[in-house]
Image 1: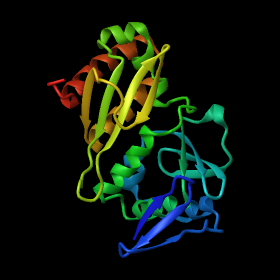
Image 2 (image 1 turned 45 degrees about the vertical axis):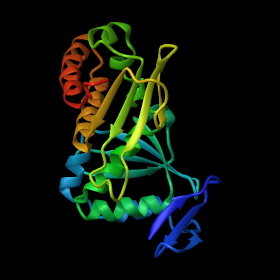
Image 3 (image 1 turned 135 degrees about the horizontal axis):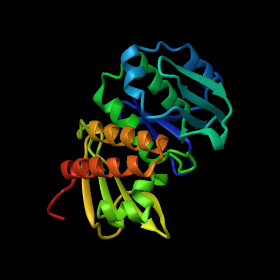
Image 4 (image 1 turned 90 degrees about the vertical axis):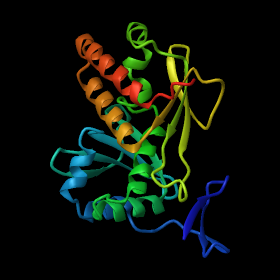
Length: 237
C-alpha cells in the first residue's frame, strides 16, 4: 500500500496500484501510542544530538505534543510551548504509525532514515534551533568566513531511488534571513548532494553550535562546515 496526500490535505491509500480509498483519522491518541512503543537503545543514541524538544502537530487530528530527548530515553508531553522547542514538524497520523514501526525495528531501513531526516529539512522555522535560524548561515562575519552564497540547491540523496526520489530543496538568503523551498528555484550558486549520514552530521553539528552560542565556537564550526561542504558540493557548478 502507498499513502498519498491530496491538494486538499486528505489522505488516500493506494491498494495494489489500481484501487484507492480515503483514510479516516484514527480515534486513538497518537501521543499515547508513542508513549507505549519500545525504544531500542540504538535509535535513542542515533537521535541524540539532533534535538532536545521537538513540537509535533498531527494534521488530521489536530493533536499537539512535544517530543523530549532526555539522553537515555525519549518522552512525550501534551501541548507545545513554541518558545521552548528546537523544531516544529507537521505530520499525519499514518506517518506516526510508520515512525513507531521503524523505531521499534531499530531504524535499520535506510529509506526510513531518509524520510526521518527529510522532516528536519522541512520543519517549521519557529523552532529556536532550526537550521534556518543558524548564525553560521545568517551572521555577516561568519558568512564571510565560509564564503557563503545566497542561493543553494540541496539534493538529499535517496538510498533507494527506485522506491523514492531524492528530496530536493532550494535555500535562499533574503533580507538577512534564510528561507527554504521544496524543489529547484532560481540559478544556484552552489549545489550540494547530501547523503542521509551527511545530513545527520550537519544537523547535529549545527544543533551543538546553537547550544554553545559563542563566537569562538562558531568560528570552530565554520571551519568544520567548510570541510563538510567540500565533501558534498558538486564542483562543476
